[in-house]
Image (cartoon, rainbow, N blue to C red; front, top):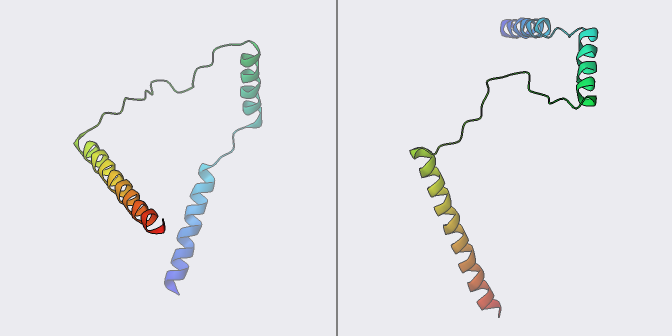
Length: 95
C-alpha cells in the first residue's frame, strides 16, 4: 500500500512539473509571427532557419560501420544464393 501511495505521489509530481514547463505562448506573439511569415512569403523573401550554425557532416565510415556493412552484404548474398538454389531445386522437382 505504501508503494502505491508513493508511486501516485511521484506520478503527480511528474505531471505537475511537466505541466508547469508547458506554458502556452501568448496568442498575440504567435499571430505576429504568422503575419510576419505570410508577409515574407508574399514578398518572395528568402527565408533562413531561425537556428544557425547547425551543419550536417558527411558520414564517414569507420571500422565498425565497414564491418557491419560488409557482414550485412555477405549475409544478404548468402540468403539470396540459398533462396535461388532452393527455388531451382523446387522448380526442377516440379517440372
